[in-house]
Image (cartoon, rainbow over all chains, first blue to last red):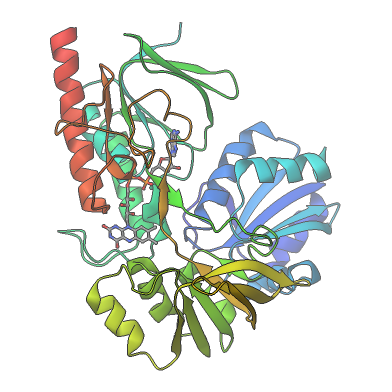
Length: 113
Length: 308
Ligand SMILES: Cc1cc2nc3c(=O)[nH]c(=O)nc-3n(C[C@H](O)[C@H](O)[C@H](O)COP(=O)(O)OP(=O)(O)OC[C@H]3O[C@@H](n4cnc5c(N)ncnc54)[C@H](O)[C@@H]3O)c2cc1C
């Protein structure tokens, strides 16, 4: 269980439902660790500003996060968290390890605006 | 004009959070502005075993408790902000954020801490997350049965190298000097570990690979000879730089850009105090940051009492 203010997706079915029902979705799969917490904090902040995007976290270690861990876009990733971006149900971008506020907003601007 | 705070604290690591606890508990109107994640470097460590009165825990827990304590006393905290402009020299001090918001205060405590030093060599940005890491506890398991390099020769480098041998098949420590800067027990533990090799007096010069890191080039400093080494991952622990780039021209600093303070944590500017890893000092620990944060808050309270 992650201790963040963003909604935590608990099952792969819920993930599937969310990405199919929302146009723009960002999901950060991580732990409560130093590389992940800054990403959750940026998402918490952006949640009220970017109402066209849905923000979610997911526990990296749960088997339910397999669709993210095993996604082709994450194949070479070796750093937590795995942060993935879905547009109309398709994964359009993914990053590995810590990302700054600026890096995240650049991705949101590029794929979701 | 927005509300005027009594104390504005820049940075929410242990020094800033402690200053926030003390000054808001003293009923001073207190604001903490933090550019990164709350807890600062504390959240970089998964195990804190030397904070007195607290059994071994992780940095996130300590940071969260400090944040809650500060908030419960009425301290306002804004994190993940970006400060563009500082006015520290006038009687009424102010900062402006990149979104145009401006905050005013009668006193300021500078607690911006430090950040990991990067190597700044070709390929470092490219392979971050696909072979290069700065956190053993976060990413170690991705390198199970793989070959690793750890860069650095201080306590963090040697301790994290030993931790990484739980996963790695083989680990090489690359260090620029012929001796380590770590405590003797940390050096011995690394030397006694059969999985660890050492390349001394050498520096990495570049990272190479296709989708993931595959090899590095290493220069042997005394001879200038460059060799290549195949590797699956590199962990970098080469010390910390003070986060003073944006304020070093506004307040007195030493040649390492560390803020100069007296024993009351006063800087050269009236009503401006500093504490924690950003100041000129020898030992950088949570306990020292917390102690200086306390002194800075008490000094700010005294300054306000005299000047109000
Ligand atoms: C891997 C690792 C393990 C460690 N383990 C231990 C340990 O076991 N025990 C121990 O006692 N110590 C440990 N330390 C050291 C300890 O974490 C630091 O000494 C301590 O966190 C310093 O506290 P600080 O408040 O001065 O700064 P920091 O913790 O660096 O916090 C500063 C905060 O200010 C923010 N900031 C930066 N610039 C600005 C600005 N201009 N305006 C506003 N905010 C800004 C930063 O983003 C950060 O959030 C460890 C450090 C590391 C890196």
